[in-house]
Amino acid sequence: MFSKFSHLSNLKVNYELGKKTWFGSGGNCLFFYEANSFNNLITVLRIYKRFMPVLILGSGSNVLIRDGGFKGLVIKLGKNFKEIKLDQSNCVLSLGSAVKDIEISKFCLQNNISGFEFLSGIPGTIGGNLKMNAGCFGAQISDNLIDCNILNKNYEIEKLTKKELNFSYRKSSFSNDQIIINARFKTFHSDRKLIEKRLEEISRKRKKSQPVSSRTGGSTFKNPPHHSAWKLIDSIKFRGRSHGGASVSKLHSNFLINNDSATSLDIEILGEEIKNKVWKKFKINLDWELLRIGEFKKI
Image (cartoon, rainbow, N blue to C red; front, top):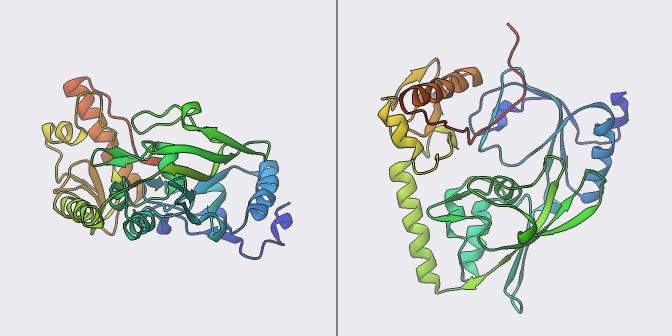
């Protein structure tokens, strides 16, 4: 049945998916496909629905692929989903869902646009950002959103306004069946020197407080209401704690690190130990911010 994929020249089989994530751990996926056009995306989606599950993958920065891999098709959105357009007359910035955060912050600097500096501190893409309402340093991606175009389960383009989407802390109302194609944002002009100063400040804070040179997936847990996840982790004395090849960052205890030899199971067990200890001591539940995908490896 998989011969139906044969006309897709860049389809990859038994792809090393885990190694392409920021953690660099985990198993393979059955198929991997980079969709460089809207028509190609539609084609491959129509085929997958008949045979297997699908995963739309962004930059792989906040995901943990389990060691048993993903028994389905992984799609990465390619060049036609990376457009950046600025309508200066209406002060509207249009972004494709595969545009990287760092590219957006650079573009905004070049065009004296303020309000997107925080994206320089997030290693993701617009599509993933909107799904999880990503944010840092006092800002989040939904702040300046106007609307977005999504592909629904019937393969139709649907426009959703910000008012139609329920954004909250690290959450949105997008369903798994909805694929974000592009989004529009309000823009605000500012002095370039002020924007540069903000970018430098964010860079300085990240280097000082986050393990930016280590293999990590970003923040591990969401902050519970009225609490900071890192403070709770410190309270159970897990800063620097390790399991197998994984450890809790000594620089920021809400970051887990792959010390070159960690399996995804090492990372997940360490995270679950933290959850259990925090619950036992404070009766506070830590929700994973990392997306854990795939199956455990059979022994």
